[in-house]
Image 1 (cartoon, rainbow, N blue to C red):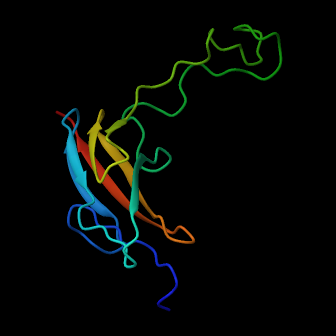
Image 2 (spheres, helix red, strand yellow):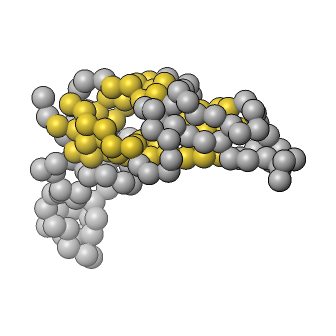
Image 3 (cartoon, rainbow, N blue to C red):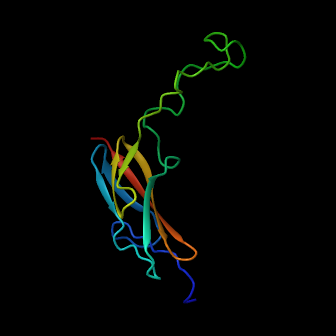
Amino acid sequence: MKAANHNPEAVVNGGAGQAPVLVNATAGVPLTLDAAGTRDPDGDRLRYRWFFYPEAGTGNPGQPVVSGPSVPIGGGGVPGEGRIPSGPAGGPRQPPPRVTLANETTPRVTVTSRIPGTAHIILAVEDDGTPSLAAYRRVIVTTAGK
């Protein structure tokens, strides 16, 4: 239908379609992902947003998801008495970011993987048509150590 709005067509590093884009990287070495060629069939303006999808991919290699001594259920909240002790002031320490992004609202993003493993980066492209429609593209970055 000619009057209807249509989804944008996301292109990453020259690859069109909907399949994930596979990229190899080295920890600490920035790489560029480029959405050049992304287009809207209706000629609408596009907005870009790249983001790290932390639930997918691998965690920190060699580090378990949970670590520390077992905590028995019940008791007074101190080691040896059971219950779950309180966290440190300010909350638990957060692990360092696995991936950092620079220029994440532009067609070209710089991705720096901080540790070896697999990370998933998502490109979301939204048009300014009525209604506004979006397209998504997944990039799977496999990072080797230095």
